[in-house]
Length: 335
Image 1 (cartoon, rainbow, N blue to C red):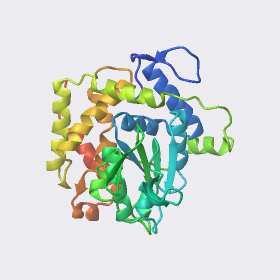
Image 2 (image 1 turned 45 degrees about the vertical axis):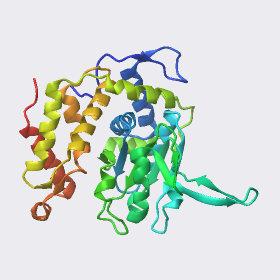
Image 3 (image 1 turned 45 degrees about the horizontal axis):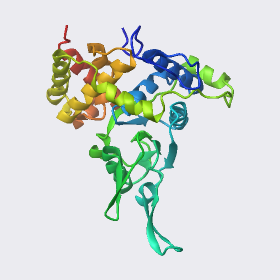
Image 4 (image 1 turned 120 degrees about the vertical axis):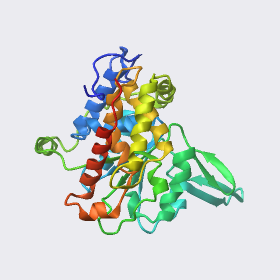
């Protein structure tokens, strides 16, 4: 059974703009995934990871070559959730103040006033984040972790919910700056987007260039904040906690891994699987929830030994996936 496509369960909620009939949460999530998937072909699975991220007060990194509709996906996600949206196109000549904002002189009052940067929104698309130097990348650290901006000795809170969808081109491409480990760890998932299947690409080619019709608004900011509290009430038995801890500890001793995942990953992992269970219409976690997010949860938190990548005939992404798969198979699944 795929945890992302459950059968029953979930509290009754109502989709704004749709029929005023309460529907189970998991059905509502499936409608959202389907709606966005009709506009961004093949994005249903990605939407699930984006929902898990925003419900656990985390963020997501989308990695892929240009032309995979990463920007459009972020825009559609914010519109279907009824949230404010802003986009930053990162470039090599940017400054941190271009992201966070800065104090400017008000000529009428002759006082310095803080002018908010584009980070002050609900959903921020940090487009091609690895095309800007580390100094600008690090400007997002405080916002992503603490939901605020510090400037001139004052703290400026960001709107709630605050969710960053960052995109990056593969590191191997020219003109990119690898993200620092501290910044990478702020992202709950790194979702690697690949070329669509032949059928999906045909659907995209044959679809209207501008899909008309009003978008159904799901959740909204107040309901997202409410669902965040519901995540904590999802039951995860002792065996699930032990399974996650054993999995994370297994990354530190796995063959080919130079540096494994941290204890902070274990904490984030547990909350993420609770969110997936909730979105699947369950108030309890099953082992499949743990397996479902393992690849995206770990692929940016493990540092491989250099010789592993050099000696392997597979591409780096395949090497990482293979090692994570071996770690999952080495840990006993709770009954």
